[in-house]
Length: 191
Image 1 (tube, rainbow, N blue to C red):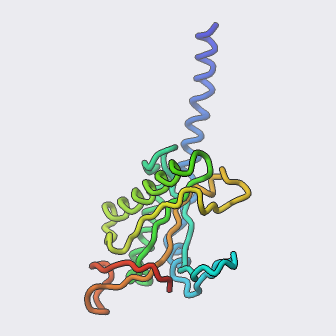
Image 2: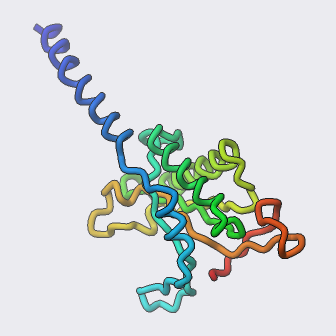
Image 3: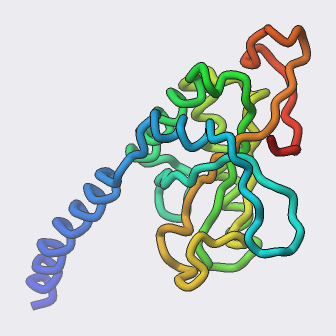
């Protein structure tokens, strides 16, 4: 009887697991033109909290998917990063630096989520550098854990598990007309 129940369970569970993986792999990918548009915006976003924080540069939240409880990119995550790389190499963004901020949901403790968000931001940076040859000088990885939830009313929602890409000032170390991809440094001041 146990064997029959195990066989039935596996027969039902495997299609569900395959469907869940397919659903994760089929998650929408934001196309490069939309990323370029978001990161090229001239408007500076001011903090709505009224706490006097400095203005922030243009940004976009991307759903870059990873294996559960891991910094291992899933195929959907790689496809999203391929689109991000196309955008970062667009002429409108070639002279800009970018902060890659990892965020998690509120499941688990703060220290663990902070480290996971850092590991995921580092994985995004490494992918862009190695696969797409984006200059490391243009990228800064940072993790926030669950301190900046996208949906505070639903702290365990998937929308909170994301990578935020924010344009930051980039100063080249050579002549002003020399492409930013050759080297330079990121500075934390917004446009």
